Amino acid sequence: DDSVSQILIDIDSPGGSVYGVAELADEVFQARSQKPIVAIANSLAASAAYWIGCSANEFYVTPGGEVGSIGVWQAHQDFSKALDESGIKTTLISAGTYKVEGNPYGPLDPEAQAFMQSRVEDYYQAFVQAVAKGRGVSSSEVTAGMGQGRVLGAQTAASQRMVDGVITFERLLATLHKIGRAHV
Image (cartoon, rainbow, N blue to C red; front, side, top):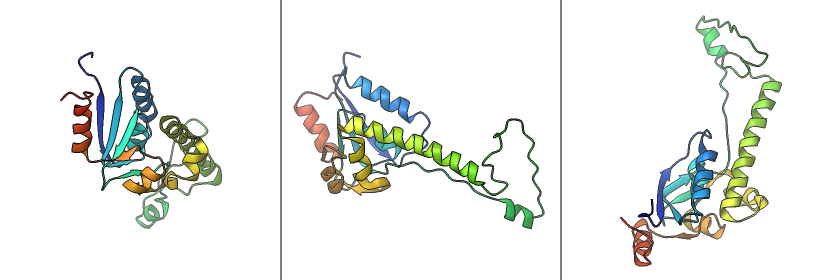
């Protein structure tokens, strides 16, 4: 849309599932070559939300805000003891060698845990690479700093180059208006 001179992404999210995040972040990254895209963590951009924010040309955080949570996790719950104590016996019927691998009706065996860990590592590497690309830093800078899975406060995040600066939403919007880069 030629009537839009710039895009402002207002983020307040703890993140979420990995599904679709890489695709959306790539869309944002590609779009920034067509027109400036600015993102602001207002007040939280964690995990998947941080991944998306990093794809903008510029990324800011509000003074009381937080960003980060660069990491990936997955849970397995073993309900077998609780079910046994309740007198419930579960029988899994499946086709495909690994179709019921990691199900919650029994303990997680080492092979299944290793596979789940490999998937978490794959997503983590994709996340790290996207942050490095978006922030213009090396992958090692992302993994060695940038919270290592923690969310960081505004000033600390800025000092670790996780964002371009600390600013209120209102001030950022006024600045974008002043330089003629925003239309409401």
